[in-house]
Length: 115
Length: 118
Image (cartoon, rainbow over all chains, first blue to last red):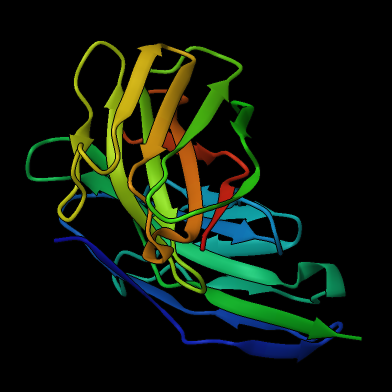
């Protein structure tokens, strides 16, 4: 079945540091890949997505490239801010054996950015 | 993207009681989903709710515990029945939107309902 593996958290960075959160996946076929962000006390927001190999998703300074050869979708940001403190979830979409569409999530990585 | 609201945003309930959570979308959508997020954990899919058919439940979730209604293309409810402290979680609804052909599906989430069972 489909699965997503994210780097363990929590991650603590100083403001303006470089961020990488690793995400690898196992899937059949050609899934779409997503990063969602959950700010404290809120629901999930779509951060970025990529629908095919070599696509780069980007939003709010965050980027991730769909690497089929390494089955990865690592999230990066060149200079983090305190406001980026949140939990980040990597996810992939695919179909179940019964043919229904489903998202599979990683366990989430908590990021704390300190001034 | 769709705008999704949920009611209530949070609640504190006594064990043995039931709570119904509402999910409203600002546009018509075919597929709606209900997830549970236990404290400090990732999201687990409870069920898929398509209008005009019975909800499809994932392994470990049953209709008697989590009955779902989907009366139209913009609304759904999830009931958490006969609650116990183990049901304390965030419950989120989401909708699927397709921007183009197959493979362009994206799920958008509501703000969640934070449930505490005493």
